[in-house]
Image (cartoon, rainbow, N blue to C red; front, side, top):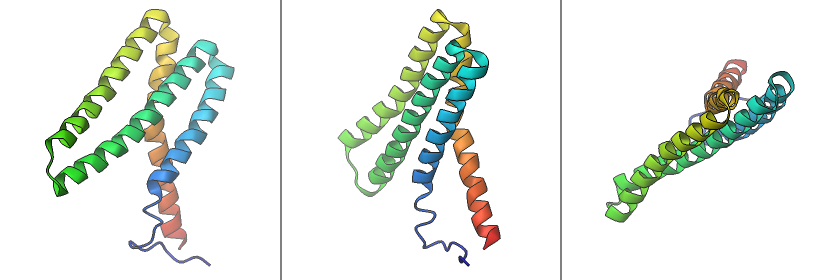
Length: 136
């Protein structure tokens, strides 16, 4: 019988890695489903949206690490780099969404669905953590 995860355990420290793995699994399942039921345009849009969401999630983790570094060590070069990464994320998403809208409206629907991949993965991680705590 396993014991409940304690705050000092690395169970919670591995949550980011588990969330990224869940994103990959949900992304592949979503791509197969979108392609099979809605066609290649929505499937391709979903794949692109999922890839952007995964990259965005990865960058966000680096930004949070950079901001925490800024609070401990002051440096202007590091702060500019963090701000540039933050802005680049949204510029990248806007440009890709515009290009997809110009090419295919269906692809844009898939893109938006793919962009919600981190939210679904975080919900799955929350359910898993709840299960581990309750099952004790």
